[in-house]
Length: 295
View 1 (spheres, rainbow, N blue to C red):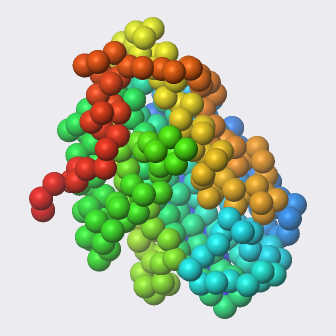
View 2: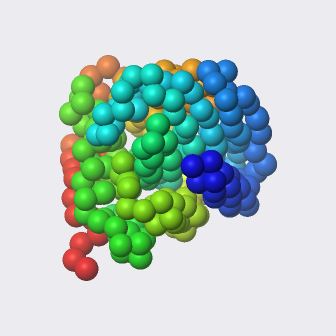
């Protein structure tokens, strides 16, 4: 089992490095913090971008921790009893671009071992503000191709993403979806290869959206940007299992909450102007659709 943990840890660290190298090329150097896990053994490496030409705030975190009892937020279909020691390894990222014509993106890959049971999970999802349909379609088709290359069920993972990233208190999707999967036990080597491939696909998935990074931004667009970011904050603090797991397991709070945008705005009773791009976001894009289309 230790060999498996070391193999996953090395693969995930390499994914973190590859993603960070890509982002340095697009933005600027990151700030790095290495930390130790106060609730048990292990720790992690957090890399953060702030106030750059592309990213108003972004972070890529790696962690590998071991504890004495799996937290409630990691409840699984395997019915792990309380008090079961666990080991968790993961890479998680969130990017909040400066320009609202570039979407926010989240990605996570993870591996858990609790007692004699182990599994993989992960996913990626996109939260646009002023989306271009062709880019959304391209994003989903790239994910479908990745799943096919690894013999995975894109449709099932997409549906799981649509069902998970919902602000239940508003009955509103967080974005235009992507992939979400958990409890993978299709063979350790195969599942590691798939989750690692998803992590390494990040540059190709995100690069097409960066063409809009220098597009002019009006005051109205910036205000809408900040308003929609508040929805992201609400989901992460109220519903996100990864955030809850980090806090319940006694993880490093600063690293857990790196996913928060630097600025957000709550507007009471906001109503988009009918027929506006702002109205189109919620009326058209924030509806589960078969974006990838026919094979």
